[in-house]
Image (cartoon, rainbow, N blue to C red):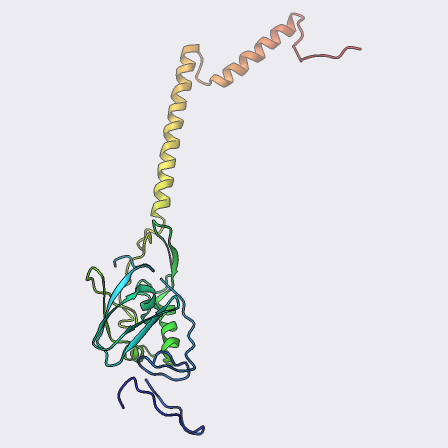
Length: 250
């Protein structure tokens, strides 16, 4: 039977047919198949930096048609043809190529876009459920997933986890490189520390200059306090009373 063709309903006691379609929940089928059970909860996900607004050129080299979905829209790419599909729709069907093993990455772009890239294991588990692959069989996932050639509009090829689960992750905007996770924060702290040290040195130099002008030792504030105490004591010794502010006399 050709791939992508639905079988007729079987008797209740017969084993469920193993048909190859990404839109059937209870059984597997490859290609576009319209079924009442067409219920999929999709989750938009977002080296070039790949984001939601990016469009990819997708060539279908499979022997069945494939339909990709995102944001309540459908993008049909028939066998032997080339179509243009948003990046999030390809992520839903093929996994996020930016995912890394054991690392969940948050990104923040210059134009205000924010998002999360889940770990490679989580992406693969989602694909297993999406295609109905049992026992987390990676080889079966690669064999069952759409056979496509995908590239950016600039002609740079892109590999997805469904094509190669061990692929190297594509970069994420503003994502730090391994071992340099806090590089920006560290740079800011170093700069603040340097500025504080310069201000402290300048203040010490200013105090020393003032002290030299006054003929003191350098601790200007302490010398002023000491001089105030000496003056107060002298005034008290000569019968003077220190001024304590207005007094109420009855």
